[in-house]
View (cartoon, rainbow, N blue to C red):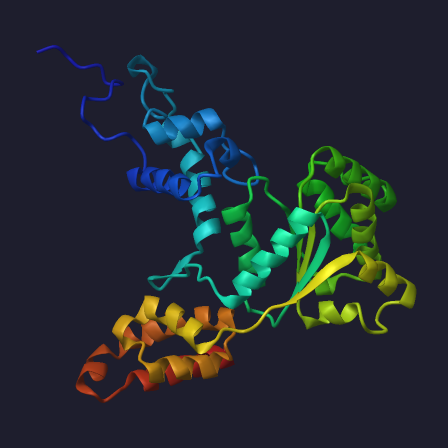
Length: 339
């Protein structure tokens, strides 16, 4: 018998690497045809070359060169790590066996319309709602579902300064962030004029007057779509004395539309809960979850893993009738509200 070369893959053997991950990527591209391997190769998505992604999908990425593959060593390649990171970005994480999958709510419809308006008309739009109604997740979902050019997505915090805010945008665009702020604004605007990308600013209610002025300046020079997302405080910035009258007038004249986002309705809570609890998601259970969470999407996502935990923990008592699903939801809800 001829001795087989150790580097040649035997005929019929499965390709090296995570086959389930490879299939997931293929299915993802079929479901999102606008996200070709050329699009996914960009740093804002998977960040691996189109050639590598094509070979990975074909099962030839790890295949030895003698067999017509690229001959990449699985132990030294980061391609699967990057694909997994992208998968988590678009699907959400799995906690306690519950996948935090995306649900198309009324807030999503409103946010989707806001983003589409900003992009189609190259204007500034404001979306606002209670913390946890789905603004951040919605922005990410819109980028995945509807866009082939990744937006510049900036998440602000209570500690953000004008300087840091402008530097963050510069770094996202690959611009040296060391020049003075005014110079950086011009460099950013020039880059956006040459290579337009929408700006998605999340938790924009934390921005101060000067940072909002920077947004106006960038829009005036580059005229790229800008979505400002935040709490109701963001909306009130345009109507209260927190800003000077002149600044409010400048901002308001550049904002095309304001979109208020609503909390989940009972039917939406039921759709989310049923995915995790199945037949246990009775009308009484759903109504109680809606009451405890106030219809805030994030709280619904947070309470479900806790319900699943207590359901498993008290499984015997649940079967015997000593404990009911209502008891479990109330226990999970008390833990939710007390941290």
